[in-house]
Length: 226
Image (tube, rainbow, N blue to C red):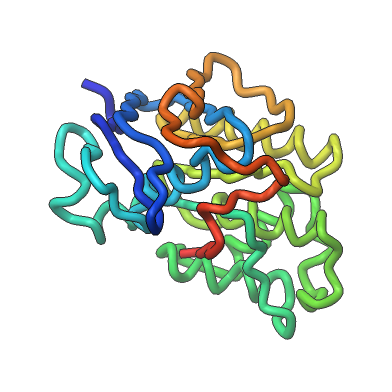
Protein backbone atom coordinates (compact mmCIF):
# COMPACT_ATOMS: atom_id res chain seq x y z
CA UNK A 1 0.00 0.00 0.00
CA UNK A 2 1.44 3.43 -0.93
CA UNK A 3 2.05 5.83 1.95
CA UNK A 4 0.45 8.82 0.20
CA UNK A 5 -2.18 8.38 -2.49
CA UNK A 6 -5.15 9.99 -4.20
CA UNK A 7 -8.03 8.65 -6.21
CA UNK A 8 -10.00 10.54 -8.88
CA UNK A 9 -9.31 14.06 -7.63
CA UNK A 10 -11.25 16.86 -9.29
CA UNK A 11 -10.32 20.53 -8.75
CA UNK A 12 -12.84 23.33 -9.23
CA UNK A 13 -11.60 26.92 -8.82
CA UNK A 14 -14.37 29.50 -9.08
CA UNK A 15 -16.28 28.43 -12.17
CA UNK A 16 -13.31 26.72 -13.82
CA UNK A 17 -12.74 22.98 -13.75
CA UNK A 18 -8.94 22.82 -13.49
CA UNK A 19 -8.40 19.05 -13.60
CA UNK A 20 -10.42 15.91 -13.07
CA UNK A 21 -10.01 12.17 -12.36
CA UNK A 22 -6.43 12.64 -11.21
CA UNK A 23 -4.83 9.85 -9.20
CA UNK A 24 -1.34 9.29 -7.80
CA UNK A 25 0.50 7.02 -5.39
CA UNK A 26 3.86 7.62 -3.66
CA UNK A 27 5.64 5.21 -1.37
CA UNK A 28 7.90 6.11 1.56
CA UNK A 29 11.16 7.45 0.16
CA UNK A 30 9.47 8.29 -3.13
CA UNK A 31 9.25 11.45 -5.19
CA UNK A 32 6.69 12.82 -7.61
CA UNK A 33 7.43 15.56 -10.16
CA UNK A 34 4.49 17.59 -11.50
CA UNK A 35 4.87 18.69 -15.11
CA UNK A 36 2.72 20.97 -17.26
CA UNK A 37 2.33 24.55 -18.49
CA UNK A 38 1.34 27.45 -16.28
CA UNK A 39 -2.35 27.21 -15.49
CA UNK A 40 -2.48 23.42 -15.75
CA UNK A 41 -3.15 22.99 -12.03
CA UNK A 42 0.25 22.11 -10.55
CA UNK A 43 0.01 24.66 -7.75
CA UNK A 44 -3.62 23.81 -7.06
CA UNK A 45 -2.72 20.13 -6.72
CA UNK A 46 0.12 20.93 -4.30
CA UNK A 47 -2.21 23.03 -2.17
CA UNK A 48 -4.76 20.24 -2.26
CA UNK A 49 -2.06 17.81 -1.10
CA UNK A 50 -1.23 20.23 1.72
CA UNK A 51 -4.84 20.37 2.90
CA UNK A 52 -5.23 24.04 1.91
CA UNK A 53 -7.66 23.37 -0.91
CA UNK A 54 -10.55 20.93 -0.74
CA UNK A 55 -11.14 18.59 -3.69
CA UNK A 56 -14.43 19.04 -5.51
CA UNK A 57 -14.53 15.25 -5.65
CA UNK A 58 -12.22 12.34 -4.98
CA UNK A 59 -9.99 11.90 -1.95
CA UNK A 60 -6.49 11.36 -0.60
CA UNK A 61 -5.13 8.89 1.92
CA UNK A 62 -2.09 8.58 4.16
CA UNK A 63 -1.03 5.06 5.07
CA UNK A 64 -4.49 3.86 4.06
CA UNK A 65 -6.41 6.38 6.19
CA UNK A 66 -8.44 9.16 4.53
CA UNK A 67 -6.74 12.53 4.89
CA UNK A 68 -10.18 14.11 5.30
CA UNK A 69 -10.79 12.17 8.53
CA UNK A 70 -8.22 14.31 10.39
CA UNK A 71 -7.14 17.38 8.36
CA UNK A 72 -5.12 18.87 11.23
CA UNK A 73 -3.08 15.69 11.59
CA UNK A 74 -2.35 15.74 7.87
CA UNK A 75 -1.26 19.38 7.92
CA UNK A 76 1.14 18.55 10.76
CA UNK A 77 3.00 16.10 8.52
CA UNK A 78 3.43 18.61 5.67
CA UNK A 79 6.06 21.19 4.74
CA UNK A 80 4.67 23.31 1.91
CA UNK A 81 6.78 25.95 0.16
CA UNK A 82 4.70 27.93 -2.34
CA UNK A 83 5.37 30.78 -4.75
CA UNK A 84 5.58 33.50 -2.14
CA UNK A 85 8.65 33.99 0.04
CA UNK A 86 7.05 34.50 3.45
CA UNK A 87 9.79 36.62 5.00
CA UNK A 88 9.05 39.21 7.70
CA UNK A 89 11.11 42.26 6.67
CA UNK A 90 11.89 43.46 10.21
CA UNK A 91 13.08 40.08 11.50
CA UNK A 92 16.50 38.65 10.82
CA UNK A 93 16.83 35.55 8.69
CA UNK A 94 17.46 33.45 11.79
CA UNK A 95 14.46 34.94 13.61
CA UNK A 96 12.22 34.32 10.60
CA UNK A 97 13.32 30.72 10.41
CA UNK A 98 13.17 30.16 14.17
CA UNK A 99 9.51 31.20 14.13
CA UNK A 100 8.69 28.54 11.54
CA UNK A 101 10.85 25.99 13.37
CA UNK A 102 8.93 26.62 16.60
CA UNK A 103 5.64 26.19 14.74
CA UNK A 104 6.97 22.87 13.46
CA UNK A 105 7.83 21.65 16.94
CA UNK A 106 11.61 22.06 16.93
CA UNK A 107 13.06 21.57 20.43
CA UNK A 108 15.49 24.50 20.05
CA UNK A 109 14.16 26.75 17.26
CA UNK A 110 17.15 29.11 17.14
CA UNK A 111 19.65 26.25 17.00
CA UNK A 112 17.57 24.44 14.37
CA UNK A 113 17.33 27.66 12.34
CA UNK A 114 21.08 28.16 12.31
CA UNK A 115 21.74 24.53 11.36
CA UNK A 116 19.30 24.81 8.44
CA UNK A 117 20.91 28.01 7.17
CA UNK A 118 24.31 26.33 7.30
CA UNK A 119 23.08 23.32 5.33
CA UNK A 120 21.79 25.58 2.57
CA UNK A 121 25.03 27.52 2.46
CA UNK A 122 23.84 30.87 3.85
CA UNK A 123 24.89 31.07 7.52
CA UNK A 124 26.21 34.58 6.83
CA UNK A 125 22.66 35.94 6.43
CA UNK A 126 21.57 34.81 9.90
CA UNK A 127 21.50 38.31 11.38
CA UNK A 128 20.46 40.17 8.21
CA UNK A 129 16.93 41.66 8.34
CA UNK A 130 14.55 40.19 5.78
CA UNK A 131 14.19 43.50 3.95
CA UNK A 132 17.84 43.39 2.90
CA UNK A 133 17.90 39.85 1.54
CA UNK A 134 18.22 39.23 -2.20
CA UNK A 135 15.66 37.12 -4.08
CA UNK A 136 18.00 34.12 -3.99
CA UNK A 137 18.67 34.53 -0.26
CA UNK A 138 14.94 34.78 0.48
CA UNK A 139 14.37 31.61 -1.50
CA UNK A 140 17.05 29.71 0.42
CA UNK A 141 15.60 31.04 3.68
CA UNK A 142 12.16 29.70 2.79
CA UNK A 143 13.57 26.37 1.68
CA UNK A 144 15.48 26.18 4.97
CA UNK A 145 12.08 25.81 6.66
CA UNK A 146 11.86 22.21 5.43
CA UNK A 147 15.12 21.47 7.26
CA UNK A 148 14.49 23.39 10.48
CA UNK A 149 11.70 21.09 11.71
CA UNK A 150 10.87 17.51 10.69
CA UNK A 151 7.90 16.61 8.49
CA UNK A 152 7.53 13.50 6.32
CA UNK A 153 5.87 15.19 3.31
CA UNK A 154 7.60 17.99 1.40
CA UNK A 155 5.52 19.90 -1.16
CA UNK A 156 7.70 22.26 -3.18
CA UNK A 157 6.31 24.65 -5.80
CA UNK A 158 9.06 25.79 -8.21
CA UNK A 159 11.70 25.54 -5.46
CA UNK A 160 14.66 26.36 -7.70
CA UNK A 161 13.40 29.83 -8.70
CA UNK A 162 16.09 32.46 -7.98
CA UNK A 163 18.64 29.80 -6.95
CA UNK A 164 22.09 29.57 -8.50
CA UNK A 165 23.65 26.25 -9.44
CA UNK A 166 25.18 25.81 -5.98
CA UNK A 167 21.82 26.44 -4.35
CA UNK A 168 20.11 23.92 -6.62
CA UNK A 169 22.77 21.35 -5.72
CA UNK A 170 22.16 21.90 -2.01
CA UNK A 171 18.42 21.53 -2.58
CA UNK A 172 18.97 18.29 -4.51
CA UNK A 173 21.07 16.88 -1.66
CA UNK A 174 18.46 17.87 0.93
CA UNK A 175 15.77 16.12 -1.11
CA UNK A 176 17.92 13.00 -1.49
CA UNK A 177 18.66 12.87 2.24
CA UNK A 178 14.99 13.30 3.10
CA UNK A 179 14.08 10.42 0.82
CA UNK A 180 16.80 8.20 2.27
CA UNK A 181 15.08 8.67 5.63
CA UNK A 182 11.73 7.53 4.20
CA UNK A 183 10.32 10.99 3.48
CA UNK A 184 8.22 11.89 0.45
CA UNK A 185 8.83 14.83 -1.88
CA UNK A 186 6.40 16.28 -4.45
CA UNK A 187 7.89 18.98 -6.70
CA UNK A 188 6.42 21.27 -9.32
CA UNK A 189 9.17 22.59 -11.57
CA UNK A 190 10.05 23.94 -14.98
CA UNK A 191 13.77 23.66 -14.25
CA UNK A 192 16.16 20.74 -14.30
CA UNK A 193 16.39 19.34 -10.76
CA UNK A 194 18.06 15.98 -10.26
CA UNK A 195 15.61 13.72 -8.40
CA UNK A 196 16.67 10.16 -9.29
CA UNK A 197 13.89 7.61 -9.57
CA UNK A 198 11.09 10.17 -9.28
CA UNK A 199 7.74 9.44 -10.87
CA UNK A 200 6.20 12.09 -13.10
CA UNK A 201 2.64 13.34 -13.29
CA UNK A 202 1.71 15.20 -16.48
CA UNK A 203 -1.05 17.62 -15.56
CA UNK A 204 -2.13 17.97 -19.19
CA UNK A 205 -3.40 14.39 -19.00
CA UNK A 206 -6.09 15.57 -16.56
CA UNK A 207 -6.80 19.04 -17.95
CA UNK A 208 -10.37 19.97 -18.81
CA UNK A 209 -10.38 23.38 -20.48
CA UNK A 210 -7.87 25.45 -22.37
CA UNK A 211 -5.57 27.34 -20.01
CA UNK A 212 -3.86 30.72 -20.33
CA UNK A 213 -0.19 30.75 -21.29
CA UNK A 214 0.93 34.17 -20.09
CA UNK A 215 3.42 32.85 -17.53
CA UNK A 216 1.12 33.01 -14.52
CA UNK A 217 -0.97 30.37 -12.78
CA UNK A 218 -4.39 32.00 -12.88
CA UNK A 219 -6.00 29.36 -10.70
CA UNK A 220 -3.65 30.39 -7.89
CA UNK A 221 -4.30 34.10 -7.48
CA UNK A 222 -3.94 33.65 -3.74
CA UNK A 223 -0.89 31.91 -2.34
CA UNK A 224 -0.59 30.80 1.24
CA UNK A 225 2.31 29.73 3.41
CA UNK A 226 1.19 27.51 6.32
